[in-house]
Image 1 (cartoon, rainbow, N blue to C red):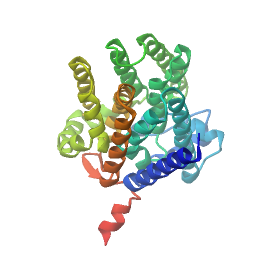
Image 2 (image 1 turned 45 degrees about the horizontal axis):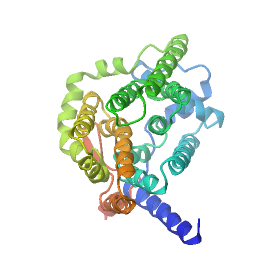
Image 3 (image 1 turned 30 degrees about the vertical axis):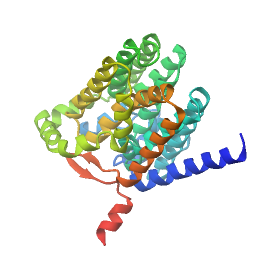
Image 4 (image 1 turned 180 degrees about the vertical axis):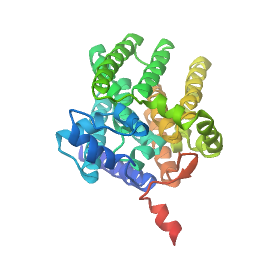
Length: 346
């Protein structure tokens, strides 16, 4: 690799980081104090939490990792998650560079910067979402069945329900020939289910009896659906963020209508769990990202490198133009620490 190539790649990475921070801003997960002050110090046992807060214990992987670093303050807890975020980026970037090449890796990177996935990860630093997105992305790029099974097992400790949906969608994509082999994802599903059994035994042993389903029933599906319908005016246009253009270009270039219909159907179906969630953008961004990765990688493999590079630049440019608005509890908002907040106050 000559010096000019290294400089261009370095400039691309620095530009991507700058756009990422400008577009997304940053903020802390509302439950970070609870996890850092009560859950981390109690491990390997679990604290007794009110019924309405127990569902967070169903996603203990962030607290488990934080306990390895004795992160018992909100700041240290969030910093551990920043480290996890960077770790996933480095590992995924290395895999993509080796297997797909720098052009494909650049497109996926630009797609991530422009997506809602990056927005929700940075808006709620300290959330288990970073593990869910990281492991879901690993499912797309890994090939060996045993590695997929391990990732599935770990995913169950992050967000079992979302992991189940993601793996089911990847199996559908595999059956239609869009990604990998369905047997590999079946191994991931088996790992996910085994992990769920282990986690359930642990939760039961610590008298944790109220899960996300209980939380949904307690909140009321009518309340959640009302928020969903009110949020659609923001949720739909921001669903894929600035990466929507890259997804559309990629789908249009698909040689057959069958593949386009399958992808579009899955992207629409991702709205179903969103309808019964308070975290509308969060849930959709996490579930849809593996599909976006698959679509972008397929485009990069069958398209001239120059065209892929132009689409990467366009995606990054669009990401710089549109701030990362996300929907939570039916309201559109920005991350707590976002430059646009400062500008709007003046």
